[in-house]
Image 1 (cartoon, rainbow, N blue to C red):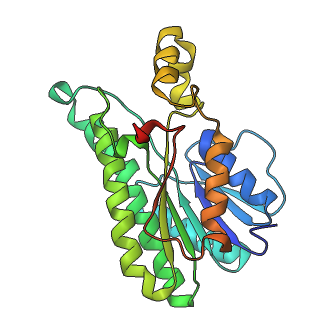
Image 2 (image 1 turned 90 degrees about the horizontal axis):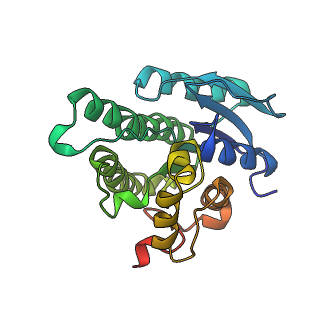
Length: 242
Protein backbone atom coordinates (compact mmCIF):
# COMPACT_ATOMS: atom_id res chain seq x y z
CA UNK A 1 0.00 0.00 0.00
CA UNK A 2 1.38 3.35 -1.10
CA UNK A 3 0.43 5.38 2.01
CA UNK A 4 1.10 2.80 4.70
CA UNK A 5 1.64 4.39 8.14
CA UNK A 6 0.82 7.88 6.85
CA UNK A 7 -1.67 10.23 8.54
CA UNK A 8 -3.74 12.60 6.43
CA UNK A 9 -6.38 15.30 6.67
CA UNK A 10 -8.79 15.70 3.74
CA UNK A 11 -11.15 18.68 3.75
CA UNK A 12 -14.41 18.62 1.85
CA UNK A 13 -14.42 14.86 2.38
CA UNK A 14 -18.15 14.15 2.57
CA UNK A 15 -18.84 14.22 -1.15
CA UNK A 16 -17.39 14.37 -4.63
CA UNK A 17 -13.66 14.67 -5.14
CA UNK A 18 -12.80 14.98 -1.45
CA UNK A 19 -14.72 11.83 -0.55
CA UNK A 20 -13.00 9.89 -3.32
CA UNK A 21 -9.56 11.10 -2.18
CA UNK A 22 -10.16 10.35 1.50
CA UNK A 23 -11.50 6.87 0.77
CA UNK A 24 -8.66 6.02 -1.59
CA UNK A 25 -6.12 7.20 0.97
CA UNK A 26 -7.60 4.73 3.44
CA UNK A 27 -7.40 1.92 0.88
CA UNK A 28 -3.74 2.80 0.39
CA UNK A 29 -3.02 2.39 4.10
CA UNK A 30 -3.37 5.90 5.55
CA UNK A 31 -5.19 6.93 8.71
CA UNK A 32 -7.42 9.82 7.69
CA UNK A 33 -9.28 12.69 9.30
CA UNK A 34 -12.36 13.27 7.12
CA UNK A 35 -13.52 16.88 7.40
CA UNK A 36 -16.48 18.74 5.95
CA UNK A 37 -19.24 21.14 6.94
CA UNK A 38 -21.68 18.34 6.05
CA UNK A 39 -21.81 14.91 7.72
CA UNK A 40 -20.07 11.97 6.07
CA UNK A 41 -22.98 10.08 4.46
CA UNK A 42 -21.84 6.53 5.23
CA UNK A 43 -20.36 4.48 8.04
CA UNK A 44 -16.80 5.57 8.65
CA UNK A 45 -14.03 3.31 7.41
CA UNK A 46 -11.45 1.77 9.77
CA UNK A 47 -8.63 4.10 10.86
CA UNK A 48 -10.69 7.20 10.15
CA UNK A 49 -12.43 9.88 12.14
CA UNK A 50 -14.77 12.65 11.06
CA UNK A 51 -14.74 16.24 12.26
CA UNK A 52 -17.06 18.97 11.09
CA UNK A 53 -15.02 22.03 10.16
CA UNK A 54 -15.43 25.28 8.28
CA UNK A 55 -12.10 25.75 6.54
CA UNK A 56 -12.68 29.48 6.13
CA UNK A 57 -12.04 29.75 9.88
CA UNK A 58 -8.42 29.46 10.94
CA UNK A 59 -9.23 28.09 14.40
CA UNK A 60 -11.09 25.16 12.88
CA UNK A 61 -8.10 24.26 10.72
CA UNK A 62 -5.92 24.33 13.84
CA UNK A 63 -8.38 21.97 15.51
CA UNK A 64 -8.12 19.56 12.58
CA UNK A 65 -4.33 19.45 12.86
CA UNK A 66 -4.51 18.96 16.62
CA UNK A 67 -7.09 16.17 16.20
CA UNK A 68 -5.00 14.29 13.65
CA UNK A 69 -2.01 14.40 15.97
CA UNK A 70 -3.94 13.44 19.10
CA UNK A 71 -5.80 10.57 17.42
CA UNK A 72 -3.11 9.19 15.11
CA UNK A 73 0.15 10.55 16.54
CA UNK A 74 1.31 12.78 13.68
CA UNK A 75 0.38 14.47 10.40
CA UNK A 76 2.07 13.64 7.10
CA UNK A 77 -0.42 14.86 4.49
CA UNK A 78 -3.11 17.50 4.12
CA UNK A 79 -5.41 17.83 1.12
CA UNK A 80 -6.93 21.31 1.05
CA UNK A 81 -9.89 20.32 -1.08
CA UNK A 82 -12.92 22.10 0.40
CA UNK A 83 -14.37 24.59 -2.04
CA UNK A 84 -17.53 26.24 -3.32
CA UNK A 85 -18.59 27.24 -6.81
CA UNK A 86 -20.94 30.19 -6.45
CA UNK A 87 -21.51 31.90 -9.80
CA UNK A 88 -22.35 35.35 -11.08
CA UNK A 89 -21.12 37.88 -13.60
CA UNK A 90 -18.50 40.26 -12.28
CA UNK A 91 -20.44 43.42 -13.12
CA UNK A 92 -23.39 42.37 -10.98
CA UNK A 93 -21.80 40.12 -8.36
CA UNK A 94 -22.80 40.80 -4.76
CA UNK A 95 -20.03 41.45 -2.25
CA UNK A 96 -21.11 38.52 -0.10
CA UNK A 97 -20.75 36.07 -3.00
CA UNK A 98 -17.24 37.33 -3.80
CA UNK A 99 -16.17 37.28 -0.16
CA UNK A 100 -17.59 33.83 0.55
CA UNK A 101 -15.84 32.24 -2.43
CA UNK A 102 -12.54 33.84 -1.41
CA UNK A 103 -13.00 32.82 2.23
CA UNK A 104 -13.46 29.14 1.42
CA UNK A 105 -11.48 28.61 -1.78
CA UNK A 106 -8.45 30.76 -0.98
CA UNK A 107 -8.33 31.59 2.72
CA UNK A 108 -9.14 27.98 3.58
CA UNK A 109 -6.22 26.74 1.49
CA UNK A 110 -3.90 29.33 3.07
CA UNK A 111 -4.95 28.28 6.58
CA UNK A 112 -4.45 24.63 5.67
CA UNK A 113 -0.95 25.20 4.30
CA UNK A 114 0.03 27.36 7.26
CA UNK A 115 -1.35 25.05 9.92
CA UNK A 116 0.02 21.83 8.47
CA UNK A 117 3.43 23.24 7.56
CA UNK A 118 3.97 24.77 11.00
CA UNK A 119 3.45 21.36 12.58
CA UNK A 120 5.56 19.54 9.97
CA UNK A 121 8.45 21.99 10.40
CA UNK A 122 8.36 21.70 14.19
CA UNK A 123 8.35 17.89 14.09
CA UNK A 124 10.75 17.58 11.13
CA UNK A 125 8.17 15.72 9.04
CA UNK A 126 8.86 15.72 5.32
CA UNK A 127 5.20 15.95 4.48
CA UNK A 128 3.02 16.49 1.43
CA UNK A 129 0.57 19.38 1.07
CA UNK A 130 -1.92 19.08 -1.78
CA UNK A 131 -4.17 21.95 -2.80
CA UNK A 132 -7.22 21.65 -5.04
CA UNK A 133 -7.07 24.09 -7.93
CA UNK A 134 -8.95 23.83 -11.24
CA UNK A 135 -8.53 24.30 -14.97
CA UNK A 136 -10.37 27.57 -14.25
CA UNK A 137 -7.24 28.79 -12.51
CA UNK A 138 -5.62 28.69 -15.95
CA UNK A 139 -8.46 29.66 -18.30
CA UNK A 140 -11.43 31.98 -17.91
CA UNK A 141 -15.07 30.89 -17.76
CA UNK A 142 -18.08 33.19 -18.04
CA UNK A 143 -20.01 33.58 -14.82
CA UNK A 144 -17.25 32.12 -12.67
CA UNK A 145 -15.09 35.16 -11.97
CA UNK A 146 -14.73 34.61 -8.23
CA UNK A 147 -14.06 30.90 -8.66
CA UNK A 148 -11.48 31.49 -11.41
CA UNK A 149 -9.73 34.15 -9.33
CA UNK A 150 -9.40 31.91 -6.30
CA UNK A 151 -8.15 28.91 -8.25
CA UNK A 152 -5.50 30.97 -10.02
CA UNK A 153 -4.45 32.30 -6.63
CA UNK A 154 -4.27 28.75 -5.23
CA UNK A 155 -1.71 27.87 -7.89
CA UNK A 156 0.44 30.89 -7.05
CA UNK A 157 0.13 30.17 -3.33
CA UNK A 158 1.18 26.59 -4.05
CA UNK A 159 4.27 27.66 -5.97
CA UNK A 160 5.37 30.15 -3.34
CA UNK A 161 4.76 27.76 -0.44
CA UNK A 162 6.75 25.08 -2.24
CA UNK A 163 9.79 27.37 -2.39
CA UNK A 164 9.50 28.39 1.25
CA UNK A 165 9.04 24.83 2.50
CA UNK A 166 11.49 23.00 0.23
CA UNK A 167 14.40 23.48 2.69
CA UNK A 168 12.38 21.45 5.20
CA UNK A 169 11.61 18.65 2.76
CA UNK A 170 7.91 19.54 2.71
CA UNK A 171 6.37 19.25 -0.75
CA UNK A 172 3.50 21.47 -1.92
CA UNK A 173 1.57 20.77 -5.11
CA UNK A 174 -1.84 21.43 -6.56
CA UNK A 175 -4.21 19.38 -8.67
CA UNK A 176 -6.22 21.12 -11.38
CA UNK A 177 -9.26 19.05 -12.33
CA UNK A 178 -11.27 19.58 -15.46
CA UNK A 179 -15.02 19.06 -15.37
CA UNK A 180 -15.65 16.13 -13.01
CA UNK A 181 -18.99 14.44 -12.32
CA UNK A 182 -19.80 15.65 -8.81
CA UNK A 183 -22.63 17.44 -7.05
CA UNK A 184 -21.06 20.75 -8.09
CA UNK A 185 -21.38 19.86 -11.79
CA UNK A 186 -24.71 18.01 -11.57
CA UNK A 187 -26.50 20.88 -13.29
CA UNK A 188 -24.18 20.55 -16.29
CA UNK A 189 -24.50 16.78 -16.41
CA UNK A 190 -28.30 16.90 -16.23
CA UNK A 191 -28.58 19.59 -18.91
CA UNK A 192 -28.34 17.85 -22.28
CA UNK A 193 -27.00 20.89 -24.11
CA UNK A 194 -24.55 21.91 -21.38
CA UNK A 195 -23.25 18.36 -21.05
CA UNK A 196 -22.76 18.10 -24.79
CA UNK A 197 -20.92 21.43 -24.87
CA UNK A 198 -18.53 20.48 -22.05
CA UNK A 199 -17.92 17.04 -23.55
CA UNK A 200 -17.21 18.59 -26.96
CA UNK A 201 -14.76 21.05 -25.39
CA UNK A 202 -12.87 18.22 -23.66
CA UNK A 203 -10.48 16.45 -26.05
CA UNK A 204 -11.15 13.05 -24.47
CA UNK A 205 -14.85 13.68 -25.08
CA UNK A 206 -16.38 13.29 -21.63
CA UNK A 207 -16.34 14.54 -18.05
CA UNK A 208 -14.05 12.88 -15.54
CA UNK A 209 -14.83 10.90 -12.40
CA UNK A 210 -13.84 11.71 -8.79
CA UNK A 211 -11.44 8.76 -8.71
CA UNK A 212 -9.48 10.31 -11.58
CA UNK A 213 -8.50 13.05 -9.14
CA UNK A 214 -8.05 10.66 -6.23
CA UNK A 215 -5.41 8.69 -8.14
CA UNK A 216 -3.50 11.94 -8.72
CA UNK A 217 -3.72 12.81 -5.02
CA UNK A 218 -2.38 9.40 -4.00
CA UNK A 219 0.58 9.90 -6.30
CA UNK A 220 1.39 13.36 -4.92
CA UNK A 221 1.00 12.13 -1.34
CA UNK A 222 3.24 9.11 -1.86
CA UNK A 223 7.00 8.65 -1.96
CA UNK A 224 6.69 8.17 -5.72
CA UNK A 225 6.42 11.98 -5.93
CA UNK A 226 9.36 12.67 -3.58
CA UNK A 227 10.99 14.97 -6.19
CA UNK A 228 7.77 16.76 -7.17
CA UNK A 229 7.02 20.13 -5.61
CA UNK A 230 5.60 23.43 -6.83
CA UNK A 231 3.72 21.64 -9.60
CA UNK A 232 0.18 21.98 -10.91
CA UNK A 233 -1.03 18.56 -12.05
CA UNK A 234 -3.76 18.97 -14.67
CA UNK A 235 -6.28 16.13 -14.73
CA UNK A 236 -8.61 17.58 -17.32
CA UNK A 237 -9.07 15.28 -20.29
CA UNK A 238 -6.84 17.58 -22.35
CA UNK A 239 -8.85 20.80 -21.78
CA UNK A 240 -5.83 23.06 -21.09
CA UNK A 241 -3.75 21.56 -23.91
CA UNK A 242 -5.88 23.46 -26.45
